[in-house]
Amino acid sequence: MSQYADFYRQSIEQRDSFWSEQAQLVDWKTPPTQVCDYGNPPFAKWFVGGTTNLCHNAVDRHLASRAGQTALIAISTETETERAYSFAELHIEVQRMAASLLAMGVKKGDRVLIYMPMIAEAAFAMLACVRIGALHSVVFGGFAAGSLASRIEDAEPVAVVSADAGSRGGKVVPYKPLLDEAIALSKHKPQAVLMVNRGLAPMHLQPGRDHDWAALRAQHINAVVPCEWVESTHPSYTLYTSGTTGKPKGVQRDTGGYTVALAASMKHIFDAEAGQTFFATSDIGWVVGHSYIVYGPLIAGMATIMYEGLPTRPDAGVWWSIVEKYKVTHMFSAPTAVRVLKKQDPAYLSKYDVRSLKALWLAGEPLDEPTAQWISSALQVPIIDNYWQTETGWPILTLANGVEQQSTRFGSPGKAMYGYDVKLIDESTGEELTGANQKGVVAIEGPLPPGCMQTVWRDDARFVNTYWKSIPGRLIYSTFDWGIRDADGYHFILGRTDDVINVAGHRLGTREIEESIASHPNIAEVAVVGVADSLKGQVAMAFAVAKDATGLTDDAARLTLEGEVMKQVDKQLGAVARPSRVYFVTVLPKTRSGKLLRRALQAVAERRDPGDLTTMEDPAALQQVKDLVG
Ligand code: ATP
Ligand code: MG
Image (tube, rainbow, N blue to C red; front, side, top):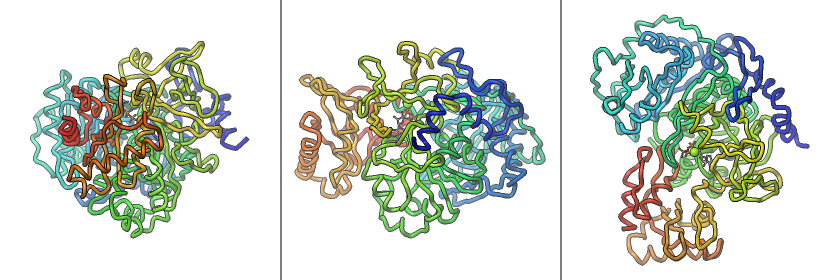
């Protein structure tokens, strides 16, 4: 049996001793008395009886051995600023922020909503919250007032931490007016607001409610705020899912399980060591930002990079210049970002020395083979796909290089990670599929491992009803993604369960059709949706971005390319999968985190109301589609 196979088996068959060993990776004030309490399934309580603190493990714990080492590097190509904080400096800043929150009336168990751009103060605020036992609820900066208001209503924060503005592609986005509008819209009113003034946009501070960070920081310049030791099961934060499929869910995470899960993932999955540098290009508004910009790397004693800006500004070499300058060892990004870079001159990549990199991890959406191949040959490092969800907090499927180096397989995010009892479930019978290469819903048998969601914030019923199905004698968590597992245990994600289309009785994954279309040399990106059809039930419809769109201004050229694409699908998948139309657009509708909004595309293609679009990146993208389908 391979080393990893053995490691995995122990994590499932000797669950408690396995996780008890992992718990040694973190500091406890009082050690746990029970590893896992699963007496009330599907609610799992990890490391019961233990007390700890997330901020202590991310910051204070390192003071003895590496106070002077770099902890946080905040880089903004928007404001052209760059600032590094050592663990000792981070410790001081976090205490100033914690003291300010306490002075504003925040207490243990209270929620603090963080609506911030990618600046160091955002990380201070998150760490300060968990330091005092308050729960942060980070909302992606720049979300419109409506989506912010609904999250304020759901989280009921006592306080909000925000900034005057963010900036994107050189354009200042003022946050304060959005925040004021959101608070006005919301039934719940936070009692205090802490504003970081970056000097980017004028702000009006509301007396009695709004506080200026610079002033409060000065008042608490020598603040000493000890960590509040909390129960392992004390919630550390709530975070809303990306909202790709509808109303976002408030994921609630614990403290002890999450700390252990992240520490373990840094060791076993990322094979990381203290003193190395982690660069995740995500945003603190998403789960990757929580786990792998802020907490994971710091828990591991690494330096972490927070980057505000685009991957293409001032030019498409900016990320690689950061890798060179800071000797980044671990990089984490998303396929969508790589596809953006792929459209640029490849010479930018060879301009910099990126030999410090050990690997590039990509997550968030399917990694198509051409993209993976392009970046892998450009960087000459392993490209490691990893599959997980806001709900789980850390990878479900990937490779655990820290346990055993295993080879990647194109198109596969890899193997089931330790702790996740991954199953494939036949949708029609509800039975477990045990054979190789059978297609089913990717599911996890309870209990979910440490670090995963405890429940939906204030809605236990929604947690149970949304995610859990029972198959005789067992409770299974559904990911709502289709997958298969090959004979060697490598999994392949085929798309979301709501992305399957049914053409004249044939069930087709939209992803398969997209891959076929994307392999055409002049297609950069494509989205396929199922559209209602009176004859066939549904037909596939494709929206594609051409690599070279110069010739596509006239109808004849468009029809030629459309015909070529259709022929290719016919040849690769068969005529049933052939899209009824291939429309050419310049940009596809995506969420702010880069996920395709198929739900909205499909609605527009069927001339329906696209519904809640608050998480959409660029409204113009959907307008193009509307104009095309008429
Ligand atoms: P919502 O649940 O609100 O609709 P969401 O599912 O997009 O939003 P996230 O938790 O950010 O919110 O995304 C998790 C989903 O992203 C997964 O369930 C899967 O569909 C997709 N995904 C993530 N990583 C990968 C990957 N490596 N390969 C394929 N799909 C992935
Ligand atoms: Mg989801």
